[in-house]
Amino acid sequence: MAFDRDRSHVIRIRNELDNPMTVSAHGEGEAFCCASCAAPPILPRAVGWLQGITLAWMTLECAGSLYAAAQAHSVALMAFGSDSLVELLSAVVVLLQFLPRFPLRKTHAERAAAILLFALAVVVVCIAALHYHAPVEASPLGIAVTALALVAMPVLAWLKRGQAHRMNNRALAADAAQSATCAYLAAVTLTGLAAYSIWRIAWVDTAAALVAVPILVIEGRRTWRGESCGCCASS
Image (cartoon, rainbow, N blue to C red):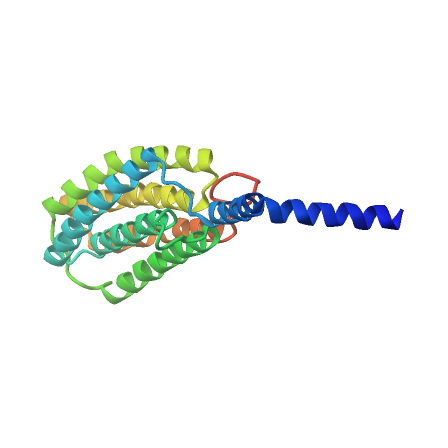
């Protein structure tokens, strides 16, 4: 029996030496499998369009709201502009997952999105504390920007949330949460700006900025824990 096993082993080695293409094909197959596993995920066209629209809109929104905030000395508009900047960075984080030369793991993207949410909450509180007694002026530009955001952001948040569920991508879900937060903050800011324009109550502007802080912290914690996607499966 031992002689037969040795003989079959020798025959198999001779066959491999006579057919080197078999060994080469096997090695190439393993290399292809490893390369496929290591390759970054493919960017869906719908996600690419959504993130491209987000980048373009957030750039304009950030510039317009920060300019209006500087002109009107508005804490709420400053917080809203900071939110636009953070959401711009969040959209970039989502896209980095799909770049071949800069692959970003989903876990890292989720943590980065959560940190951006926490950073926004800190920025809002700091700005509100530093400019509590600063004089505020009416801002037609700020009202226009926040009104447009109040229309556009819920649609973007809904579309992103749908794609996040299909892909089980929590970083995109966190970005959808930031779009929803942007809409909420736009509503709060618009209310504060309109109230100040009508009644000239100075503290309404600061209150409008601080109202958004709890939802930012809650969404940041959910994103950090991987709960924003609403899926039980971990990726």
